[in-house]
Length: 234
Ligand code: GRF
Image (cartoon, rainbow, N blue to C red; front, side, top):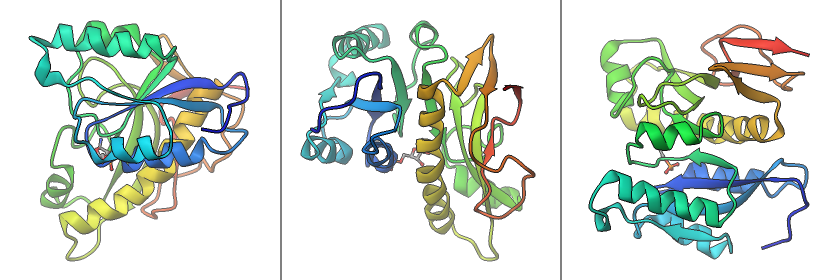
């Protein structure tokens, strides 16, 4: 791997499968001015296709197979051990399919982010595309948020809406949302690791400008909506 300039924030990406968001983050971090270094890709599934891709890129990888631990606490102790061993300062969950306990989440408060394929707080959990279509909403989308113990909750960093089309299908909607995920996740990780977005007492705080249009939410898929409920400091 190319040597990283000093001062980059060592980041771990946690995956369980395909890893397309992980790939988008890795690609973004190749830019010399990106504030995060992808220092570890960690999977709870040895067979995760994303893991093989990361290995091919010469990124340090790790496996903590949850099936080999007696309980969640032991699994998370191993996870934490590997994160500390690699001197990780920030975690990006990217399709990581394990529920994390409150004590684990709390020790990473403000330093762990997640991407979810809906406009949270709508459609937490699984099958978000099917549920959005069944509900007849005009748009769905994706959200990057700080992780809190309650699943798919936590202060929102950025969202991208995606319009629902006539005769839309779950697969079609998923593909259009995924394109937006690959766009907003690198933005969000960059903002968090550069310190431009911070979590202060449970509130997302923006320092300076984020360099994207924060005006108005519309149904166009090019809109990016940073930190919907935030305090702004210049
Ligand atoms: C993405 O849709 C993400 O929003 C959700 O899980 C999926 C992971 O896809 N959390 P990938 O592994 O990043 O391709």
